[in-house]
Image 1 (cartoon, rainbow over the protein chains, first blue to last red):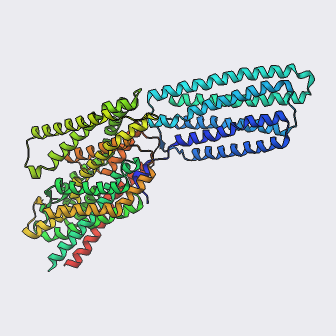
Image 2 (cartoon, rainbow over the protein chains, first blue to last red):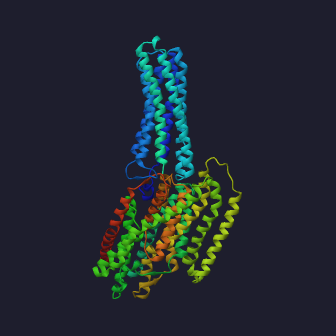
Image 3 (cartoon, helix red, strand yellow):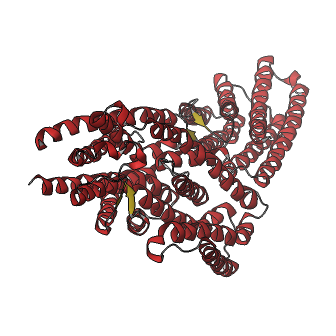
Length: 224
Length: 411
């Protein structure tokens, strides 16, 4: 039965945005196991994990598309519609980058030099922390809408976003450190491996970059 | 011989109209309480049926205009009162059928506007173009704009008050405990003002305004004191303070939902019982007057019709709304219902027949503008405009059609 009052209310995008974040987080949580398998050089383990990442990325895409389809122009929200869509795009780019890492690792049998392992794991852990920090932020979005966008809740979210920035900055430093280490080992390695490892580390770094951008987008949403 | 049949037909048509009001307007008003989880479906139906019945019987007009809002001048029919008899039945049926169809189609029609449209139809067929008071019609048309527009600022301001004083504070739960009694006092004040002044004057005689005011202030202060004592002791683990604030607001929402049902019953029952009362008066006196008395049993009949409409069809409307609007919480629901009821009562005191459903749409939008609701579908505005444009001509058309059939049968 159709009813005017029931039709007046549109599905809130905020809970779905967090649902999307949880899926993205699930996907980035696979990054560490993937790199571990990469360091071990276990091809079957790598393939298994790449497949898992690819599946999770696809599931995140589905949620993303659902959110987009449920936000037509005639829906009126306390925040700007295009801000939300930009936020969603960045949030989704996190999972896309994880999948790119997976593809790069899968496409060529590359062995990781013993001396690079520590730096690589450090970087991956920091990137994981960055995404975790972002997840802390997005879990507050629902509370933000419950509070009808109250100033105290906005301040709380702002300070949580700063945490994401801090982690991303640290991840940048670790990426630089790992790159230096890689080039210090270049004489003992074939150039293709150096090139590919460079690209893999860059893509791992961009997972954190996209997490930071997502936080930035949220900043725009709550700014006034 | 024809007269008892006409009376029965009139009562039947009046009941049908009251049924429609219950199933539509009242159900629309109660839905948010179920959506917010302040009332279960069963309790919402009981509250709605009880309070709209009380509103109809206690506060419904004991004297009504023969023709609602003076759309037609009854003097046109002074030479032939029986014309008015069959006309009134046609009006009730024409308006009722349109409301049923519109409800089925999901168009938010106003019961008041449908009756007005039906009266225009009858005026046209019974007395020609000059038989209709077009100035009165233009006031009705102005209400199309007034009803949603009046709802928006009232709800916006009320929710802004809740937002600025409670939700926006560093400790929302503590603020709610502190400010809660003020809201209780405000609701009780308006409620008792409406109840004593508007409603019970038929029983208490007309009390002087200052003493009504004094009584209302008294009720408000007692309520504030009791809630203050209760809230002082109230404490919970504060995991999510906003949710605790919502829980605290539930009683307020139930109170304002009862108020809205009461307001609806007292105002809208005239749409159903007015024409019936007119028919009875014409039968008894064989004269046509500007105003007619409404017998107690007719008001009670209207109240029963409302209650039946709520409990047969209306509960499904309430359920649909409750299931779909999970994002309404008690604070938002309270702001929406309280401002809708107040706008409806104020407008009807001024003499503008607003549609409760349209006012409710306005109040929800007002709360959305105060950032209280995550997402509002503005497409419904199109449905409202369509229903505005259709209601008067279609209800008029139905009435003309039914009137022609009745006059063939009677003559």
